[in-house]
Structures are given as C-alpha cells and as structure tokens.
Length: 435
Image (cartoon, rainbow, N blue to C red; front, side):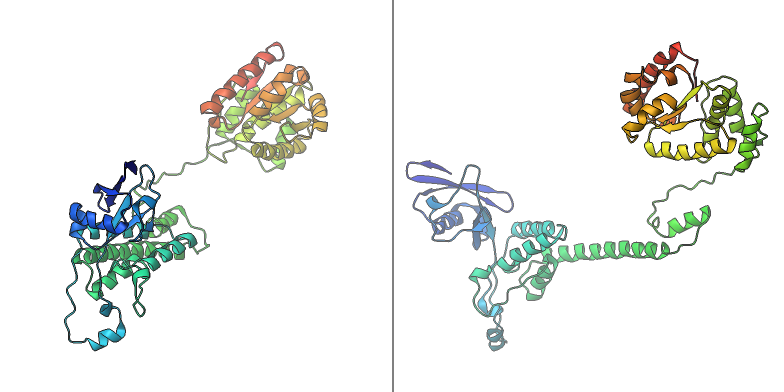
C-alpha cells in the first residue's frame, strides 16, 4: 500500500487471477471498498455477493483501510459466494413453507465455480495426516462452499455442513444450489478415481494373497507368479529362456603338491572346473591372470590354491589380498583358514584394516605372511609407512584384487593410482604376480 497525501491505493485480486487497484481515502472502510469494487471491478459486478480476505483473514465491513497491515506486494483477495435464504436451512421453517416455490438464487459465475473447484481438488490431493485433517476441519467449519455462507454469519438452527469436497459437491446437487458443471465434473472425477483405486487395490490384494505362499518356485513358476500378481499391469515386457550349459570338469592339476591334493579332497573337492584348473596352472607357472565368471563358480580357489602352494614352498614369500569391503575380507578369511588347516600349512593369515586393534598391528607387521586389507587402508596406513612393512612388501609374490569389477568411476581411478604406488614400492623386491 502506498500513501499519497490522504489517499491510499489497495490492490484487489479475484480467484481467476484478475486484479485491480482501488484508490480510497485513508478513513474509508472495507464497506466503501466493496462498494467501489461493485462499480469498477468486473468479478465483483458479476458476483455482487463476495467477501474480502487479507492474508487468510476475513475483513470486517467496519474496518478502516488505513488500519489494515498491508505491506509491499500484499493484496486483498475477492472470494464470491451465493446467499442462501434462512428458510432453506431451518427445518421448522421449511416444513411450514411446503408448497411455496423457493426464491430464485443468484447465479454464480462459471469462473468462480471453476476457481473454487480447483481449490477443492488441490485440497483433496493433499496427503492424509493428522495435521492436514485438522486443517481441513478448521477450513470447512469456517466456510460452506455450496452456499458461500460462513459460520460466523449463520443464524441459530442453520445446518453447517462438513466433510470432504466430494460430499459437499454432492450436497450442492441435492439442495439444488450447485452448478451443473461442477457436479458433473466431480462425479466424473470420483468415478474415475474409484475405478482406479478398485483396480489397484484388486491387483495389490491378488498379489498379497499369492505372495503368502512359502513354497519354493521353479524359474518358470516364478515368472507366472509375477505375471499373475505384481506384474499383472504389464510390467513384464520380455521373457527369454537361456538354456543351461553342462559344467566342464577337469582333474586336479598335476603340478599341485600332495598336501594340497589331500586338503582339497578333505573338503570334498576331487576335481575342478575347467576355468579353475586353467587359472591355477597359469598362476603357478608365473603369469598374471584375470578370472571373470558368474557368482558361486569357485573364483576364490583360483587364487587361494596357488597362493598357499607358493607360501608353503617359499618360507619368505608373502601375499596381499585386497577386497573392496570389510565383509568380503572376513568371509574370505574363514574360507582361507579352512583350506589352510586342511593342508596343514603353517602360514599366518591376518586382516589389517580399520578394525584391527592397535596392539595387534605391530605383531601383524612382523609376522603375518598373508595380509588381507582394502584400498583405503593400503592408501592411509600401509604405503605411507612402507618402511614398517618392508618385510612383507619386499617379499610380496602375489597381489590378489578381488571383485575387480567394482573398481570403477572415481573409486576405480583412485584404486588404480594406489596400485601404481604399490608396484613402485615393491619394484626393488621380489617379482609379484597379479590375480
């Protein structure tokens, strides 16, 4: 609001977005403002019954314009409504006036109805919560969208409606004071929404009933189960059957020691997969290898067997295992100890990571021959203090990098630089092989 001498300018905006500026004396009241709007503002002329709101509060007719806290950028909102006679709400009066035609109601503009419907749709789309429920109850208790009457203007004995916007629009239709466009739109929206909800709930109910079964399913049965349940709406767009392949087995390599052969047989391994045999033979013969096979195909044996074979034959040789996660390191430690105990090989296997107690680290640096760690620990605690790990790094024969496919992006770039530093530090010692 800007003041020029004894006049003030007030911006008023309708629900459909149209606005105007009314110039009034400072001592003018809200009643004077409404009179000026009825003569100069088209939304007020089309719907002469309206209320004025400022910052969500309804303005009293006797309030002075100069006393309103209208800041820069603030505006007054014009909300039209339809006046309904008291006989329509009073039960006793309605019973006495049966047979008399009700007075003709003033028509509400289609723009006002459309704006009100948009507001109701937005309120209906809000998520259900205790706060929103309380807010909606307060809103509906203060205003009746069908009649435009506010509870503070109602007389005793009048009916104050409450509930959701759909119930109110249905009441409008029954009482005959709602526009046909608004009722038909709400009914269409309600019908479509009920159809969608029932359709979705039926799918969810069907899926929930099917998923209560605890019996194991074969691949084809699982696909059919998904198609009838969670995938009933066409989420499954392609099904391809990949034929199984016969496993290719070979005998244990001839260059394995007798102790390792007996150890493998003691844990139930009498023959190897072809890729295991090829990887073990290549590694023992002194070549770098990369093994890429599916899950649970025995990749750990491809490096555990040659590493233990080397450490059992060369009492100075050491090995370094690098895992991307601590959980994988702990799991591999158990597998490695089981194979080591079965082969009766006296090799100290230890994990060196952030969880290793400080009192144990000195002993590990001086005695461990197979060190299990991760790229972060290698970067922070091993390579910067390579002098303390000189016994291990100078005799490092095998470097095993497990889960190599996970080293990608920034993590992969950083790990590659760490491995370069490791190779440079170990360059003056024993030649090392990567698996």
